[in-house]
Length: 426
Ligand code: UGA
Image (tube, rainbow, N blue to C red):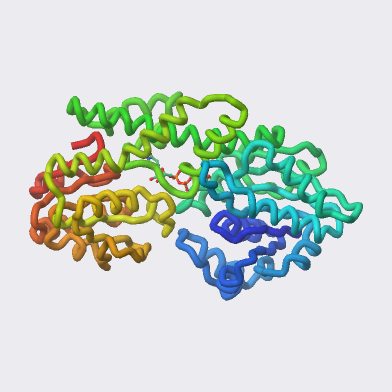
């Protein structure tokens, strides 16, 4: 099939590559010339495992190209995926400006029947509105069917998740369009769930909200663990083995971040408020998450007292490992909190380069930790497990580790002589 993907962020780029790998003829459209040029030159301009190799592989196939040409790309393709961003407005609702301009672009350039598939995370009812926006701009007799097909991939695992989805959700009011979308997914081995467009939109928000809820839930229990001296990882293992609960997303942490959970939970709350349905649990999920960095700070202050001029080595800046994305990263909250305490902040991240006058960034964790009064782990980059901890300890001023991701082996570190504290885990 000839497929156009609009929006070359990490979702749109991954989708373009995966569809081309499956044999479709794919055009990636973005108005940002820099992104398009980078991709046309064969460069993935963000950090996401496996994508560069896949792009290299596809370069020889002629099945994939990237463009800024709106008219030609819409003319040449009858299936159009929408992968543009839906950032948060000030009030927490989803900002649909990019969605609306995509609809207008399609309406103004329609030259045949098109199936438009919305992958962007959009509030309930947006697929319907999107169709009316297309029609407002459409002066021809050609028809469009708009289908909701939410994306469930995780950053840092984008390629794996796209090739091995748990399910494909299709929200559609047209049998013709549903059949076309099913054909696109001919090679995936998972359930394909067909529902209404509103149903698909709400599935996406509910999935992210539930995962965020699991994290805030375990983070609350972790605080109880800290108080009564129980290890939260024993609790996570103890409940996670119950298949009704499941073991995923039960890692206590300094909170969830990223471009999805914070934004999507706010947007869900905003939708619920619009319909006068109070989602009380979700309000608490947000409140707990906002407290987490402060909670870690209070743990640090409990041990180190006044932090003025104390040297803190903060390891990890991205909101999760295997990505260079720092949107809503708890590490940035930690930096702000430590800066307010007038601590000296040294940071390291394997891929993120942060420009901020609050920090000094180092090329290695060892350098960041030199003469430090404490190490604060903010992102569970796997390489931090393998650091020469004995050597690092010898060069520190005070050997404290505050593990905001519960990723390190506390027993081993204590044997070396570190004082270790995790979240609900000491
Ligand atoms: C999330 C969802 O997991 C995807 O299914 C969804 O498609 C995506 O949002 C989206 O809507 O686009 P993502 O934000 O990339 O994916 O990353 P996650 O792996 O879900 O992690 C989100 C945050 O939760 C990270 O800060 C992570 O460190 C934190 N987390 C995760 C915890 O603190 N504890 C856990 O047990 C798991």
